[in-house]
Length: 172
Image (cartoon, rainbow, N blue to C red; front, side, top):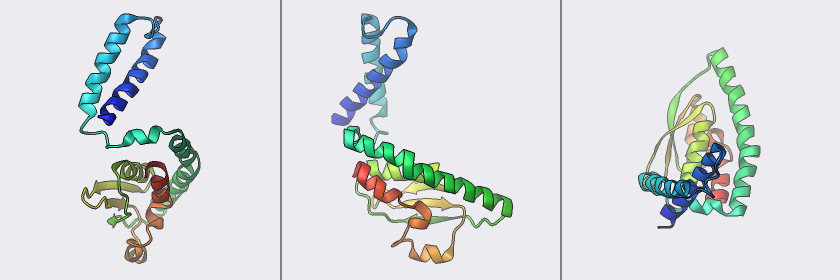
């Protein structure tokens, strides 16, 4: 129920923000308020099967600040390095693609979603599948190194860097 209410509230705030530029502020217009509530409830009902349980915990100010620090710092830096690496591999032709299973021990859906999306947004890697029982990720990697693959259950840094620790801190 908390997921549904939080999603509805967030949609309603977004709706008011988007309609406030139409000339009549949604806050002062009764029709806009009613339309906003109806649209927000409808969107929350449609999103119910998609939205991970417990996602609203990320709205905690400390977690939001951690998320902002993560995006501006480590995630941006990893994405910049990955872009350079992918350009190098494309130009040089040194590509050995493959799919690697990574077990990270993440316990909730929000941290798993955050990690999977971070991996996917980083060039050279793509989260293909998530095992729902164990939360293991299947990652398509542009340069599968056999020596690294042997260490992957214990050391996933070559594939996902410090993303798992940040996912635990932000959404854990």
